[in-house]
Length: 479
Image (cartoon, rainbow, N blue to C red; front, side, top):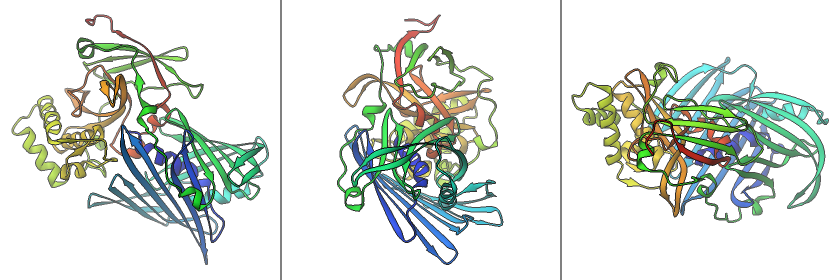
């Protein structure tokens, strides 16, 4: 689950890393001090148009499986920062997603392409939002005086939405760079993603060019350092992302406990933002000082999470529930059954058997990609199951969070990043997990969404920060 999150973190934060006209900047990307990739930014000016291109390439290990991912964003703007066009091309372990758009008379006309399927949408350009050149101009106008605060609305082509960025200028500091020691200005940034605030720190020179950027990710520091092309393109080092996202359980959990209910006590591993977890029909959360008490029951409660809206039934770019392949699979799995509870159970069982090649080598595939090539891990099971549910008229959501594993990649009794599905059945949201043996009390939900990997924002803040201090059976549950 965490592989797209590093891309969205870096692409959002690095948008201030603009090169001078006709020039380019290269950065090495480090995770906890180990090189995992490279970032390049170029800026070209022709007549009244400014073209900015930002390219990111990362390599991560997932329990011994090497995952390659990349993203290239291109934007066209006028010299005064007015948006004209944009694109984002992302590769995750061989899966390509393309977003292209243009801005005309305040309206965005965008196209999304994945698995050979193309969709188009139109919406108003978010008032006040800027692309990279507009953000560069705003930074150029800043005084860089200690204590200065700036706010901007940054448009993200990858997710087709805007994120508010608050920047607070700090003191000048001496920073060690590969090219030597430099006196740079420190800028603290906060990105207001839905459901989570992500923070980063940038260091800029007197020309407003970024030289270093760091942010928390997976419980450690994710860092960009300007160092020139030879340094940036040097070989990457092994870095197993799962080592940082696993949450050890203080004890083994029994089948009886998992089948009934459990109470978890969580604390933060650091002094960052207060922990926050979602309330769902099966999960209730309350704060106890700096800790969180999370109760998870297998049985769902009604009235939690709100009734589904039209988008929970509809096809989208990642859950292509109207595609003929998806419709045929769904109809074949449910047959003549009309009861939604039984249909979801049949769909869950179908997906569990349909994806025979269960591996960690897929980046993040859409439902249609999985239907055509049935392989992957929990995310591929979740997006396919969610799409199949929608194909037969059942509202669904994709949940990201943690799942209990007695054994995983040589580790015992741990919670691993996980994804599953909520479906609106019998007047409440109920969970289904086709990747495991079904939903149980060993599932800790972070957030629920429409299957778009760029919107798993809650995981940006929580992965790597959670410490599980205690697990106990809920009152009335068998031990």
